[in-house]
Amino acid sequence: MEVGSWVIGYWRPEQHFEVNVWNCFERRVQKLIKAVAESESARVSAKEGTLSAVCTGYTDYALLAGDCLALLPQIPDKSVDLLITDPPHSDRIPYLELSEIWNVILGEEPSFELEIVVSNAKERAKTLHGYNQAMSQFLEIVSHKLSSSGFLVLFFNARTKESWKFLNNFVVRANEADIAYCGCFPLIYSAASVVQDNREGALRTDYGLVFARTVNAAYPLADIPGWMFTLPTPKE
Figure 1: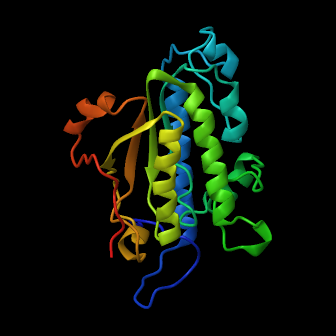
Figure 2: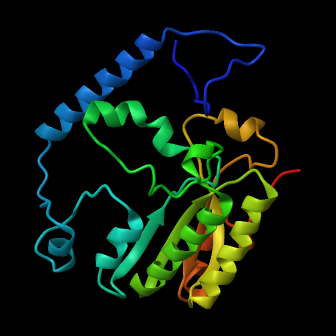
């Protein structure tokens, strides 16, 4: 039996069914092995390199894992045409906590201190105020990196009023950084999210929020299904 979605944290609803955890893990590992084999056999002409090598045109791409607030400043100003970010939605998805097992398997040691997130774990001291500050710092850096025709796409959803205030404040700060909010579109997933269906105040779907140097730059995007020029609003 295939599990159709995932949930945050460990809990058992009143109506539930159980699956063998090892079977789920084994299927994931088999899919990973298959994907690695296919990628190794594929003929890829693109050349991997460092961030600086990509920026100077010597290589085609770089795969980096690290703090975005430290990596983004290394990119030349006004050189980015498209920046897509899917940050933790305030306290909605604790990415590092959920991926801890895979990080151990891969031998990765990401910094929990540098994660931009809101956490109810008191020992982490990850507050909404700190989250807003870090996201504002991110926006300030991005404002210098986008080209004149560049776009910033932010994937977003939230479930608390304070988290939704962040969205409005983010738009205000974007305008102050000479980046205009252009509109948004709903994101479609292969499996429905238990969280989106059940958490009070959350949207039924995540949205891609589009920012650019000018509002007019996004008018061609209005053909995207579900496109809105206004901000999304939380469900009651």
